[in-house]
Image (cartoon, rainbow, N blue to C red; front, side, top):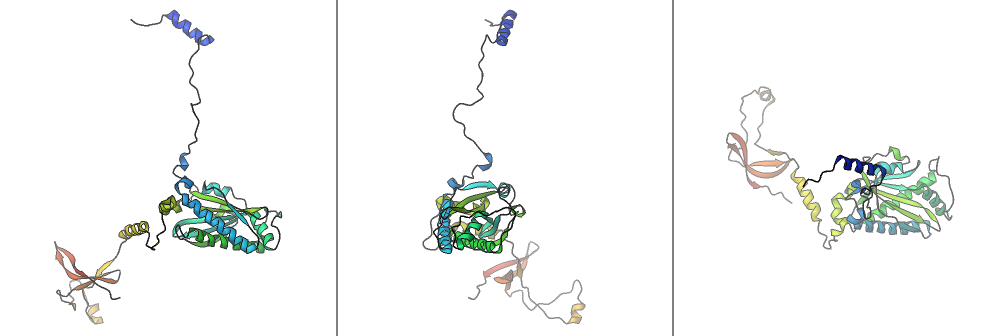
Length: 327
């Protein structure tokens, strides 16, 4: 039986909706349960979770910095490690004041350029501490460059930091740090694409009171070749054997390398008169017989012995044996 409403029933229903006498079900604008923020740009960049050994490296670095700075100023210095953070390069530059103490360095064999930022307050307080003070003075930061004495202190701290960074990485993946240059204006530093992510960690330095901080930033892409190690899948090889990951990677890259192979067919001697009279079609008699083995060179190094000939109307070289080079 058809369930159709009459016109009077439709009019009454619409009138009830307009006056509110008939209630309707409304969908809630808020979903049930707790909300969880989801950032598409940072997925698979959970540095602390994906590369836990990076935290171990930073902890070693902070301990070595503590020892080195305490020895330098002959006072007990505390260095506390902050959390690992991901930040875009463009946002990192915009967060720094002008002037700032910014230093660029390489981490061979890792790719990319690392950045070390020494807070201006730390520089001023370390100058005071180096000369016997408590390192708690107040100095105006903005509007001036660093003095020669302050620049020397900065140079000393950068040297300590880069040396300690090498020591901190030694058991995980040995690196060699190389200082590139220093800058005071972060806007002129363009070592990465603006959207490139940096892995950043801040180290707060304290004497009797906070002196300032050192921030270490390394491109996220620099860690890609060694993610398996930083993920905890690495154990130090007690026998000193080479890393199989790098061996396989190097082997595959070498297979793509182009080399020049040449075959020495022989030689002959000509006078200058005969050389000048040479023309197309002339035949030169070489000093080697077709039965004599010919040496093939790979990039100038003798590699094979074989014979020249023809196959399917093409010039060919048949390898008979490899050349053994004398030790």
